[in-house]
Amino acid sequence: GAMRHLPYFCRGEVVKGFGRGSKELGIPTANFSEQVVESFPSDIPTGIYYGWACVGNGDVHKMVLSIGWNPFYKNIKKSVETHIIHTFKEDFYGEVLSIVITGYIRPEKNFDSLDALISAIQEDIEEAKRQLDLPEHLKLKEDNFFHLPEGKIVNNR
Ligand code: ADP
Ligand code: MG
Image 1 (spheres, protein in one colour):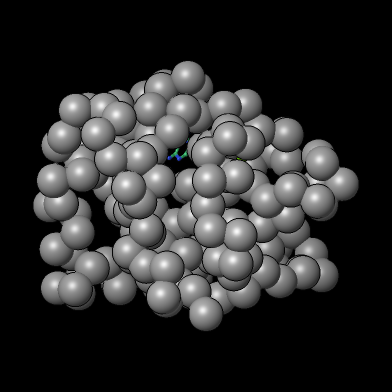
Image 2 (cartoon, helix red, strand yellow):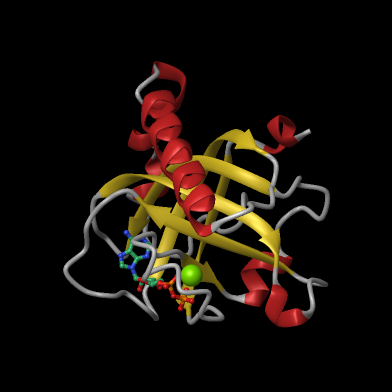
């Protein structure tokens, strides 16, 4: 399952997504480039994960992440999208996003309504916040990965 790939370290540029309107829902998701997504293990399960994230040399924040099928490419390519649990003053397209994925919440699901989708995501966020306060997850917030010069460790190497 998902666990054998974790913790998973990844760094890459934030690119324009395909305008699902995540921001309009109050849940913007920073999308990684196709190249970064392709460097993920091909057998990592799709679904909702959590972990830590940092933009450029900024602070490390809690995040929830979705690995899913990208409708823009007719669902033949995966997309990896990070919602950072923090309010930013500005967008950060083009900046380097560093993440460590530490846990798995649930598989991808379909929802009957937008309200059902939004409340599921809010539950995911609450679950992520609780889990990330546990010592085994909290310790990764302090990982050297977030303090090393850009590019030193990319995609788990
Ligand atoms: P797109 O389809 O281009 O990914 P989104 O509606 O998902 O558009 O918004 C994502 C963008 O919002 C990110 O690329 C980033 O620049 C910005 N953003 C602002 N706050 C956050 C946040 N807390 N988490 C993720 N992205 C954020
Ligand atoms: Mg997005």
